[in-house]
Image (cartoon, rainbow, N blue to C red; front, side):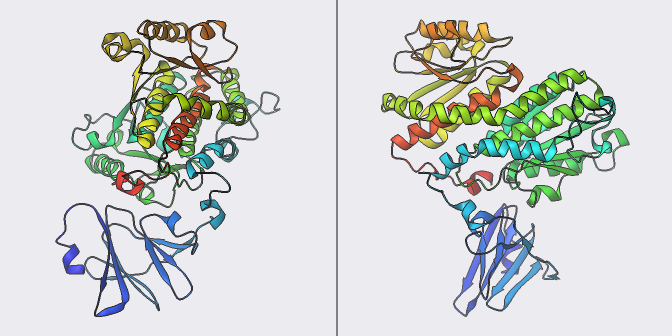
Length: 481
């Protein structure tokens, strides 16, 4: 086995059995996740730790270039050169109940309903309890956010680049908006799969953020590794500054980056990311506020306004779930034969339009596209007719009237208009055929709310079509590779 794996190229996680050694299982990892579970007189291997939770909470994650021998007597770990390694399993703070549906039809729906708790947990983990306008302490000396990131990583940052794939890339687009508007730092968002082969020129004082739900996304890890290596030996301003945002701090990304933001979303079983996307957004809000405080780009009153709005979000998400799910489920009856969807958004909600389209095609196999609403008239409008529903995200703010105007253009093509917008907006009621209402909040906070109806819409369309919502032709592990 050791001789064979040294001749392989590419990414792999392999488990091998041999008729001559029926009591042994040999596993090997290279650029693909592989975990070993420790039981009582039994041992397991899997490509992701949630699969092991029903059987054991003692888990050892193999690193790249490692093999392990599993026998009834124990586990031995080696590197590809054949050297025995000393490694100990860790104990997960998970329990089997976390990987049960708990009365929900699918894990995806369960995880959509877990989002209020996820937001609360993330805020409680990182918001400074001493920060308050009513505090006796001078707020200029108190950072409102406690991410645990060292000054050396963030001080003097002149630009930020975000590397991610899929849903995490959409979270990065929202993060770009927040980092630029709140902290005043120029930010680029790159597809990790493209960055690997066409990296940007080296720039000084650059913070690189890798965003990955699983912490094992191969393209993201490879892009971070390349960024790290190409800055080795460079002058101090060009040295690598790497930050990870993940839901799995024990994963491979922790070995690459200087520091991590753990999004505290808990196990996500459904292949379509929902609660982990929202938790990534919260991480970006907190990072942007941290940098805004350090750079003094927001007055304390502005920071307090954003913090107050963030604390209100869990209750508002619960309100959407309680009031909208039944209506959205009934609405999906009308899309039984629909083959195309268009999602529109502007500003900070353009990434949410992309995310809504991704969720729909990912689990329902309906062709869906997200566009900046202002770009629709520059080509995509030709696709519209009565058979193509258009979902427009229109929340009060600087682009609200613009989105309504773009929606009217779609209506002129006889498209059915669905608005994600506050219920009490009279102009919206006149334009949209159906409204998926969200509470009115400050525009900069709206993505956390506007994505919820789109998740429910995608889920119920897929469920009504009789599809297995939690599994797609590409499993999460295959997609990460």
